[in-house]
Amino acid sequence: MGIRLHAVSHVYQSINQPPFEALKNVSLTIQATDEFIALVGETGSGKSTLVQHFNALMAPTSGEAQLFDVTLTAETFKDKKIKKTPIRKRIGLVFQFPEYQLFEETVLKDVAFAPKNFGLSEEAAIQKAKDALRLVGLDESFEARSPFHLSGGEKKRVSIAGILAMEPDILVLDEPTSGLDPKSQEMLMDVFTSIQNRTHTSIVFITHDMNWVERYAKRVLVMKAGSLVFDGTPHALFQRPELADWKMDVPDRFKVMQYLKTHHSFKDPVTTPDELIDAIIREGQS
Ligand SMILES: Nc1ncnc2c1ncn2[C@@H]1O[C@H](COP(=O)(O)OP(=O)(O)OP(=O)(O)O)[C@@H](O)[C@H]1O
Ligand SMILES: [Mg+2]
Image (cartoon, rainbow, N blue to C red; front, side):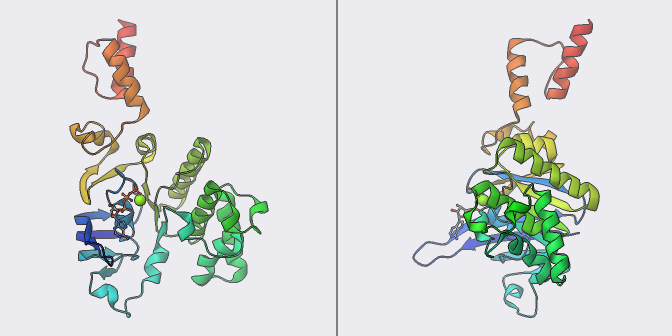
């Protein structure tokens, strides 16, 4: 078991602002290997807040977060003897906004920072960084550039490379494909899949795109107003009547299916695109 949250709530406290409960009583378990989880939910539903509890960046206000062999609560989080850095190496989080993550003067130094920090020699860290940059599609010409003078999509790739270079056991990606063109989005999702196939790394990705959910995720978590309202397969999610209430879209394939269903009456009930294909084939043969 990699991550287990038990009844986690998180209240943001800011000066001159009323407290805001962004997470409400969330319980879930994420295995250390082979999970491919999409985390979805409308804007402001608590997704980014939730994933920051996955790698000890945030402490639960109440409840507990068990992250591998460390259990964090509001009290133990303050305990200096409990080291957070090893947790952040095993559970790597790519931030929603790359600017929060980038800080070195060159792209190569930025990506090599974590592997060096976690004990690799300079040379080995540089090699890991180069490999990670190639994986996310950035060639050598980017290595000496400042990470701050890149386009939004290039910054996103550098921030992803920085976490890949650390080779975490669990890879958590907060909207990894936002700001990228469709081909680059697909390329990156395929990179994550091939990493999992090779190393069994568990992957959690936040997205608003239901096509990616259907295509890549084995499991989906849905957040609504700080609560976890669904934990199941994409197939089960897209059948749920609450989708509109959760502000969820459906994949394009389902929209095409709805269109065809309203213009054609099939003999057999059709609820999924695959059943639609079967129905069309059967009717063609009859
Ligand atoms: N530092 C903060 N102080 C107070 N409230 C905050 C803070 N950060 C986030 N919130 C609030 O907590 C709620 C959850 O925010 P969060 O960023 O987790 O949402 P999200 O689901 O990731 O949204 P998005 O899809 O827009 O990225 C929002 O209502 C947000 O306004
Ligand atoms: Mg967010």
